[in-house]
Length: 126
Image (tube, rainbow, N blue to C red; front, side, top):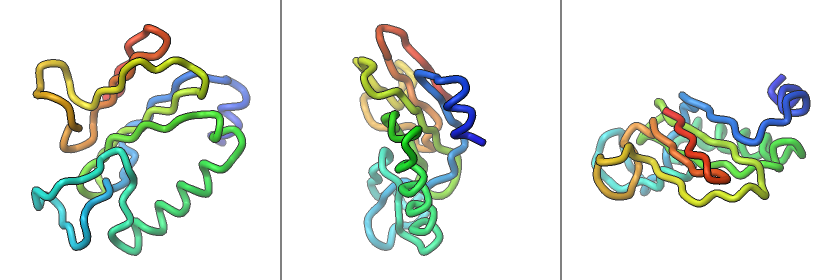
């Protein structure tokens, strides 16, 4: 159904909320343990997370989905998270994962924010 939507509508940008995928973390990491995460990468720390990551990787090989760059902002655990799909070839001048004034760099801890400037237009996904 989603790929049919992409074919029919041919969007430049799609924002997805509540992706419910964990961020990549160090071995043995637990929810809210304060250990650093790679919030732009899908984690595979548990068997379920590993299986989910494999399914996502397989889906992204679909020719329609491979036309997009994916920008992830993920939580410590399988909760919340956002993804922004931006058509390859569009100029992305900036990606942020925090609201302006909320500190420097990094990601919102729950992965709820993705702000991209695409072709000069600022797009917010929260």
